[in-house]
Length: 357
Image (cartoon, rainbow, N blue to C red; front, side):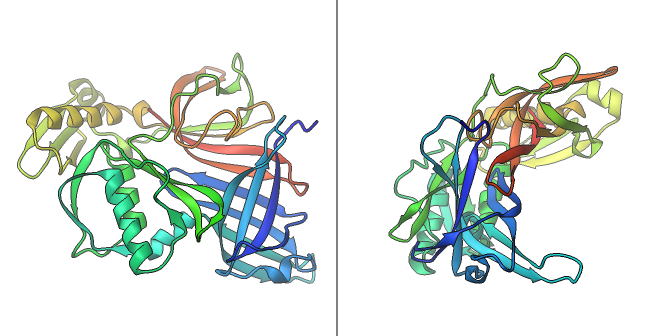
């Protein structure tokens, strides 16, 4: 029985017809990101049976994962080949480097001029914008009719003068302290659709058992772990404002420790002073110290929790570090993960990008 998850890759055409299995892919990595497109990259020799079938734009990569103990594989990536680079050298093997993107990436080249003058659920806005581009600009491959897009948080938007990329709308909503998360789940090709739209106030949940540790007296299941704490993101004097309201919150202890660090934050859809106070204070609490804005990256070893099996993008996971006199523990949110897969299709490790919550 396999001791690590296994992956199989296929190249298909726009109709979903298989052009071949990708054999012995080198330097294969698949990256998953919160509110951003997934990406896969690999190399094959120019002599590979699949090399001359791979064309940017008109061919697609499908990747299936079978977890340890599972009898069936699950589609975990489906998207267009975006970049193909053939490179030759007299000192080594000539290779073809392939980069494929999740279909979320099509939204970087689709624009919106939508207006929502009444307060509207954010998921409904994103769904409506994608529905419009599907019907007026052509198919994106994103299906919006199956998965609920209700977020429960409303806002007004006006892109009539901006002509904003739809991907930028998703990023703005995702970055807002009262925004929402958006992701695409790959599906088998059906009526031109390759993925399902998902929107939620927060993607993910706390995974108490997905513990990542590095160093003494921890689970020691990570081969590397690093933490970055930067004053660039710290704010201790925050003014929150909307169209007609403003409020200010200050953390005097943080000011005493770090001097006054000011930030203005827009909550344009907030219409009551009580809610504006709550949201502004919440922003302050998340940015008040270097520890509050810490970013932790790590590479998991064979015993580390595994993406899709033990946790997913957006989940909240415990992180422990202990070396010499430096000790820290935090619950971090997973913003990105890159899975490395060897030439035989065996999952090797995942590197994670996380932030303290």
